[in-house]
Image (tube, chains in turn cyan, orange):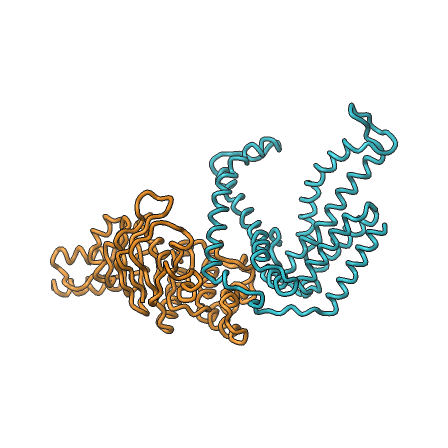
Length: 251
Length: 282
């Protein structure tokens, strides 16, 4: 089972694509999701994203991420449901109504967020961090400092998640029970943010020093050893995603 | 090679100096082991060699520290890094890549090693650490010992004149700890590299070090060959450094006037000393 946002080696077409192209395609697909309100098209994009993930062996990891995004977007959906009085009235509220249209908008938001996040997450599962950094520096001319900072941030997410679970396990061993209501869980977890923050700052500082003593400051745009030539599949992927964006705008 | 002259250091946020009046000379190719109780200033001593102080942790720096003639205060961290390779205590934080190959490439790319030389450097570094089969493995899938070897390989790929390691076996089991020291020692001998290791396991240090340095309260209490330092096992115990039992046993035999040879480093040495004592009694 893949860990959150951590590279999983493979030989799928998506693994073999140019890292910059993968990143650009993912961003275009995410933009496409926000350019349309057509629910059917969004469902199609979501299904395509899931199929793509399954094709490169990341089906389970992506489904797990979808669940997390779904949980987050549900909060947003409830707010929209209560504040968007569209269509034929179904439920009267003190400040308005929940109408037939009110149901469609939050549903669209949930599907949109899931469909937009899958390609972005998938990039990190099928691409090495250093390839994303080097390719962005060489081909997209992104300054190395920014590219490295971005990929390091993503790289540290699972590290901090592991730290958080270690802190929670230590608390559980001392008799703290994290089971129960969400409010109770949040109340118990807030104090743990302090040790997590301390550990995060320490780790980030160590990482910065480790990078500096290995010549971080003398790196240039041409320093990267690997080359990232564009292949036919990269052009095809770009053409397809641009076509999807156009369709999304037209719809 | 490495010269400390009247060196003292106080961290900016600290009240008292962490290190005081350090005078130490480390020749090229020497394997130096530094040990002492927690908070004695061991790690700070290595930070002075690799330039982490004062470049990353500023403070009051007195005296001088030179590495191969390079003053660590006046030189940039990058210039020092080209001479001194460092492996930090927290290996997971040190890893900047997700795959072993990229981790080894990182320093080589940064220091602008010619591209035609890079594959050879990567292969040589991994072979020296005996982990060539790990080339394409995700770092997250490695054991603690393997990660330590990868961290070492990523540094020795740069062919530094000095290697500085801060508690490299802190999270390793005894077998992996010995394996790391064996690889390190062999590499240093073959390449004439100066190695400075901070380590709590004095038994392990004394087996491999040419020079053993005991730090206590920010001062160097002992700096000599392991046999001479280990002869002071009682004083070391008072400083919070627990010598191997074999060393303590032989030192007690010496104190009782039964043995007159040098202090021993390990069980094999103690066995030899005990045999000598027993044969002398018969």
